[in-house]
View 1 (cartoon, rainbow, N blue to C red):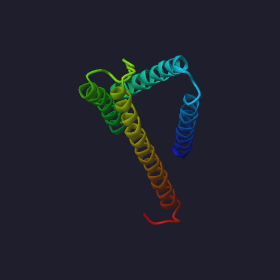
View 2 (tube, one colour):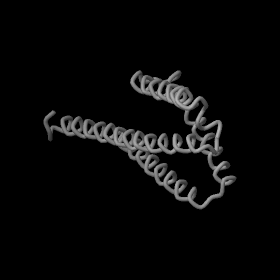
View 3 (cartoon, one colour):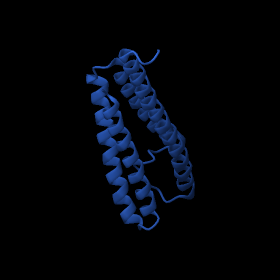
View 4 (tube, helix red, strand yellow):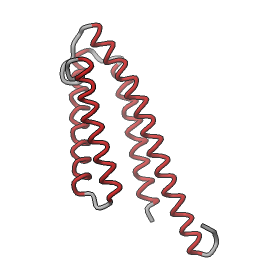
Length: 147
């Protein structure tokens, strides 16, 4: 039943990862003005995603999904606070050419990528577990399997 929905969401995840990789490849060849425009565009996309998460947290019919949306929002807020506390400024709001800021931004990007890979793996695990449970239930209902 939900297998099709999860397949579509996993395709969306795969497509988003491919798009992000393409964007990182492009940044090697863009000048500073081009990168600034790309940063602005991705920032807008992040704001749209955050708004969708807020909507899910406020209007979610599934308590687990609403709780997860709230967790992501809390993470986003704490991340922004942490970055600001460490550097004294918002990482994405003030692009500074100092060597310290560049190094901090590079390390932040490295760990953000590590976290994104972890989150993608967790999402894949959750989807696979849901499909597994649905298949086991379907097998049990058909009398072909055991729970």
